[in-house]
Amino acid sequence: MLHEPGHALAGGVVFTAFACTALGQLTVRRFRPATALPTACAGLIVAAALIATAMATGTLAPLLIGAAANGLATGIALGHGIGSIAARSAPEHRGATVSTFFALLYSLLAVPAIGVGVLIRATSLRPAGEVFSGVVALLALVVLLSLVRTRGPGRPDVSGGDARP
Figure 1 (cartoon, one colour):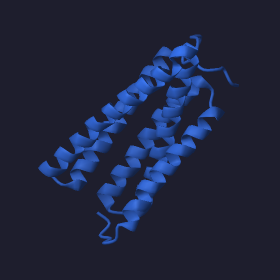
Figure 2 (cartoon, rainbow, N blue to C red):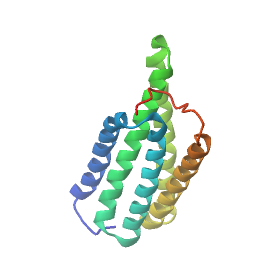
Figure 3 (cartoon, rainbow, N blue to C red):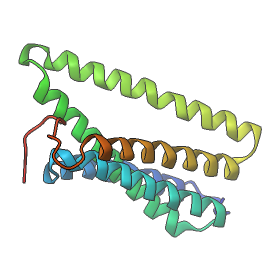
C-alpha cells in the first residue's frame, strides 16, 4: 500500500504492534479493573480508525500510530483478562485455567486472520483492510457500550482483580 519494496517497513510495523502489546500488559497495572476493558475498547476503536485511514490514504504515520494503539489496547485487554482469571481461579487450577484462556484466545485469533485472508483474495488488500478495520471498530464499540451499560453509576465492579484507585 505504501509502495515500499523492502520488508523492513512491514517488520517495523509488526514490531511496533507487538512491542506495544507487551507495554500494554505492563501498564494494565496502572488501571482500575473497572476502566481497563473500556480503555482497551476505546483504544481498539481509535486504532481501527487510524489503520483504515492508512489503508485509504496509503500513508505511513497513521499506520504506525494505529499499530501502536492496537498493541497497547490489545495488551491492556490481555493483561486484564489474565489478571482477572488468575484472581478468580483456585490456586490448584490457575495454571490450567490460564492455559485454557490462551488456547481459546489463539483459536479465536485464527478466525479473523483467515477471514481477512479470504477477503483479500476476493477483493484486494485495501478494501479488505478497510472492512476488517470497520468490523473491529464495530465489535469494540458494541463491547464498550455493553461495559458502560452493565457498569453504570451505582453498579459494583465485577471485573475481578484488586480494586486499585
